[in-house]
Length: 203
Image (cartoon, rainbow, N blue to C red; front, side):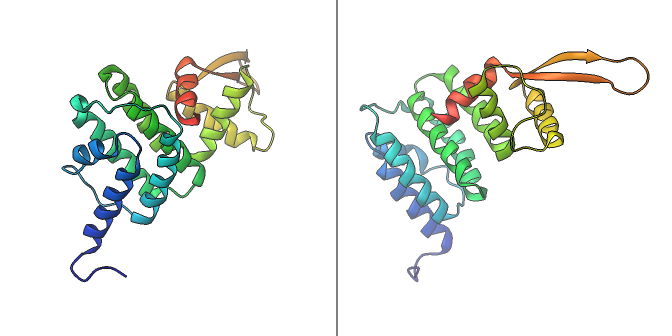
């Protein structure tokens, strides 16, 4: 039950603050950075998210947060929080945990933060199915068509097109039929950007 003196937003903010404080090594510094640029979050998901993040960070060697790029870091954190609030897939929450961890590890590198921002934006926009298909390409490391075990070929074709438009997948023209039935036939492979993205969200 909420304290009578706290509204829902206040309570959410307290949960976020407590969650950030759980992060080993950098929790205190991150609290100082974050609480000037808050957004409303669903506190239960945020609370669960930070428990997972705390465990993940605790497995690392000690490191320090570089606050010189604080505004950029906070902007990316806000995007992650907004997405966690909306996330319906546990798998996607895990991907955001990995993204947050990698963001903290690259906080001292402004060029690295540009890539963090791109990857978090991509993760926010693509579906769980698209991530699964991309992860399959990442593991296979070879060209594939639209026949993937466990997926409808039409769904795979649409997902490949979406991933290709984002630069995560390369399209390889296999056949071009002029006139009559048929048309273009493609195979697909993961791109350099797609490989980097998978390494970012899967580890």
